[in-house]
Image 1: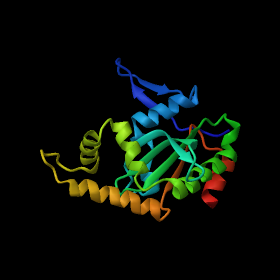
Image 2: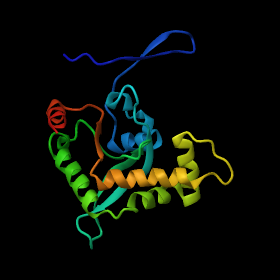
Image 3: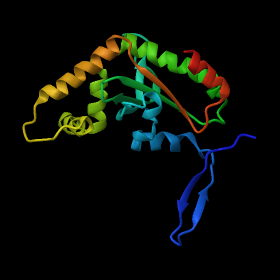
Image 4: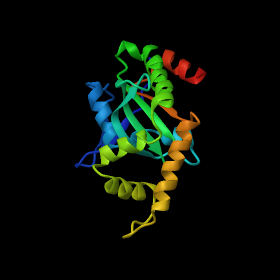
Length: 194
């Protein structure tokens, strides 16, 4: 029997209460939690000394399969980290049988086709749509990057960040994250191999 990590809270009466470990009721709940709180993704497991922080670019980011087509696929979330590295996130429940192998092929389709067919400004355009306007996106990025926001703030910071995003995408430097309530051993082996 696998021992699961326990989470505890202290009740209003001062008693220790164990919070039961339960799988997510549905995939949409897990997807929404990540969209609302991308910091739930454990960046310290990627780099404990300087963990990535996440900025949501778009949920259901569309990806075409050639230069002249409409979007064929949609990844669950497109994030960028503080260094401008695009991060593709695919969410599955552990009870979904596709989590064993099919999700890996799905993610590789996303990455290969995004690198081949996204124009250089696609990620920025998706981020503007999510933020509601270019100005709102700039303010959110200043905050995300830890800069003081001032009236007439220097756009060089924002442009340098987007240049970094473009450079990472052009060089094929993307991060692929598989997120589930529990990662099966078979998927873990494939991820470690990749």
